[in-house]
Amino acid sequence: MQVLKLRFLVDVSVGRKSEQYLNTAGHDTLCVREVSTRATDEEILELAVLEQRIVITMDKDFGELVYHSGRNHKGVLLLRLEDQTGQAKVCVLSEILKLHSEEIEGHFSVYQNGRLRIHK
Image (cartoon, rainbow, N blue to C red; front, side, top):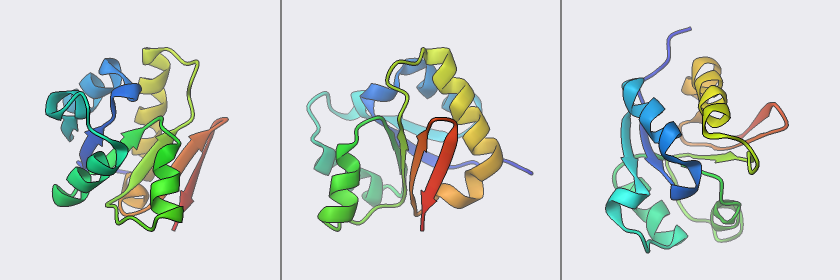
């Protein structure tokens, strides 16, 4: 299966190693730290919609924005990897993109305990 080249907006919590991996893998990657160090979750989601990017985050508040507040999104990938190293996050991202790059765009997806749940 070929990995699609996607457009991502990477939240600060995800880390620099993941940002570097996505860039090296050829994805169009914008990091929140490059845009604003004080951006709210709402502003991050708005920017992602404006630029047609999938948000990659470790912040559970994005679920609240999408499901309870009904905010539009191009896709959100919530990584529940709180105690993982940067390299472990890269391995998870690599596997997700290898197996699910066609499915995560436009959906809210949660990776936890070795499983990816894609809410369509």
